[in-house]
Image 1 (cartoon, rainbow, N blue to C red):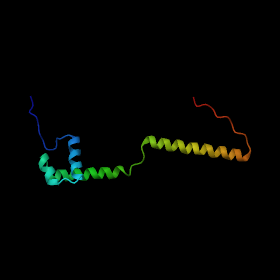
Image 2: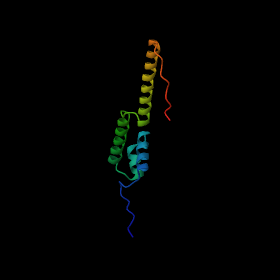
Image 3: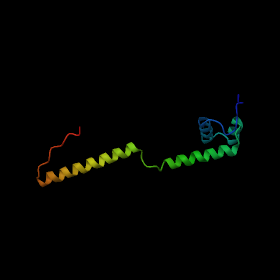
Image 4: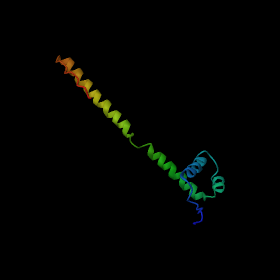
Length: 100
């Protein structure tokens, strides 16, 4: 049977997140460090990494679903503009086919 290992870096991601959130809410670095038994430099590094990832996520392109919606809207706009041009030219419009 292996002994339970209590390493400093072996805490769960949720515990790391909560520690960083405590720092971002204004808790003192030394207080959080002592209460969790983690070195202050480790907490500072995690806080900076957390902020860097958050900042990077603000510049990422929209999600795939949003991009598909945008593409569909652009295609629909193109169809409507073509229909308008055909109506203005006096040519008859073709019947829409079912997409089923």
